[in-house]
Image (cartoon, rainbow, N blue to C red):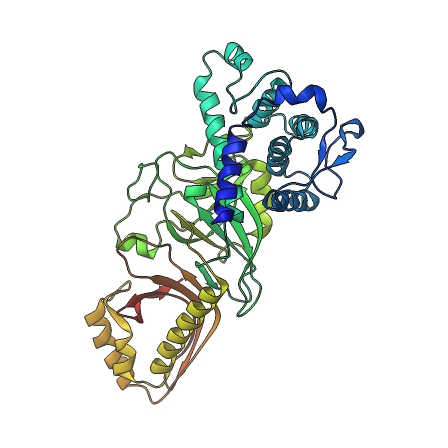
Amino acid sequence: MLKRITITVLIIGLLGLTGVKVGALWPQQQTAIVVSQTRLPFLTDDARVSEQRKVDPQVQILFDRLDSRLSRNPDDYEASLLRGLLLFQVGGLVDAIAELRVLTLRAPKFQLAHLILGDLLMARFNQVDSIGTNGLLKKVSSGQEQRIEQLQSEVRARLQGYLFLLDGVEVPRALLSLSVDTDYALIVDKTKNRLYVYHNSGPGLSPELVDDFYVVLGKQTGDKFREGDLKTPSGIYFVTSYLPDEKLPPLYGSGAFPVNYPNEYDHRLKKTGKGIWLHGTDKSLYSRPPLDSEGCVVLTNEEFTRIAQYVEIGRTPIVISESVDWVSRREWLDQNIEVQAALETWRQNWEQSDLNSYLDMYSEDFWSKKYDRNSWAAYKKQVFAGKKFQKIDLSDISILSYPTVENHQPMVVANFIQHYRSNNFNGRLHKRLYMVKEQGDWRVLYEGRQ
């Protein structure tokens, strides 16, 4: 609870820049403030600190994480922007201005950085109550009120999404199990305008957060159901291809990763539309407001290039949620074991030709490309009758928990390679199961090829 209050106060302080008149502090405090032991990136020597003061431990964690981001990638412009805001929040106005000056030189199209730098410069002489509201800006930006509001919404989304990482976040329920050959998975939290990159830590180990990005989403909020509704879909998707910038209109920036919307479950719900991509930003811009796409997930061009290292065509999952369901590592492990056990029971019942137990693991709402529950039962009864033995092995297993939908049962998607051998047929198939939890038991809702 205390952590949540600390973060809330921090967000309010940053969005309002400060609750006190910084100009009143300026004459007495010419030196900036050191907030960590590490050397402040991008600051000139005369802007560096000779005095060290303590900051709130939660704020220090943020500084440490931003320093880590910048040490891994000096071109992480969002980290520089957030670091400048945090420096200002703890009273380090000189350092904050120096950080933002260098950032605007390195990323001249980053309009939000220019806006905040202007506010910080004004803060030396006058009170600035919130970002983009200083009197001088109002005089010189007549007719640009909508653009200022867009930049304010962008900084709000960036801050809230980033600071949320301190709010007791542990493991996303969605990533129950990644196959040994799946190195990374992407998680999009629509309410936070944030994309998280998780690394596969190995069997039985929870995935590790390795990167995160501000993203732009559809102009309309909520789940996508109709073509042209300007909404970003919620669901489990997979990257299907890569389109380089030279094959795309300027709108898509540095490139695009199309995903398989509508997926099998979307088709079941009769959702329409297509062309949902993860892509860059028009090269005439640096970034866009939080809700500004036609349904795609949009990054800056620099960050799209950076995220490409995590994406493998046909394998990397992108889980898009209205709000990510975060759970403890214990809860994550318990559900992982539970679903893995259900999948193994399904395999064993099939291999042992236990028709009744096998069919009991299929939902009454089951569907596939050719069958419903009744026709599937009739088909399998006929197949089992012709088998003297069946040997089934599953490999390359990934299990993902579907984003929570109100009034719907828990559901998972299992991808695997199925190795099948019997007295009259041998085969290898990339298969996908949707499994739903009904009255406490996991049952197959959909079965088909990947």
